[in-house]
Image 1 (cartoon, rainbow, N blue to C red):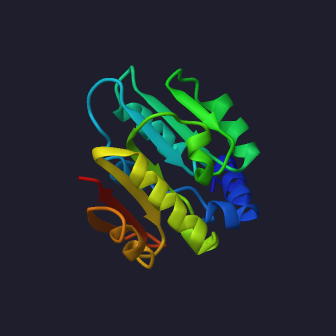
Image 2 (cartoon, helix red, strand yellow):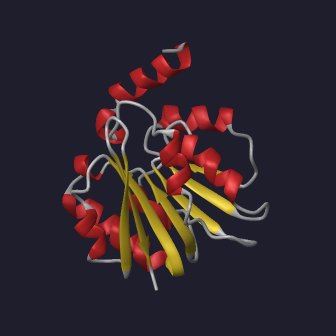
Image 3 (cartoon, rainbow, N blue to C red):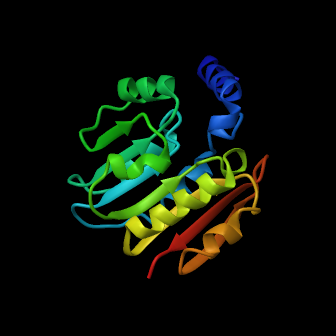
Length: 182
């Protein structure tokens, strides 16, 4: 394991209850979770759980030059790391919880990408994040979530109009939920 990967694993382990993982997501997750990003100009994408910015980089590769990404992260060290690592005028790093999204974003959102560890947050908080995200999603937009189980899928099905799940057969298994608002 390289020095950077080891340092990342240590940071993720120290912050297990906020990251929900021992390490960064796989490259397969980075690619799959971004498959439902909107195409075209002036799109707004919100990312919950930015970590060290691996998914953030993929989002920025996929969106148009005049679109915007608001990346929420509760860990201030991760926020500083990403601000120093990713220099892109389309990226707005927000050191706050997803439940406070409306304090930072006005208007509707075209897509949500999330790695929130729903297993480690209170059910009421998680349900509120899902509900607020649905209300803020433009019709046709997606909320895409990565987790390490399919356990929370029904929570999304109760709110979003159409949901499907893709399982990436890694160790551990990675579950991507794609949830669409009609």
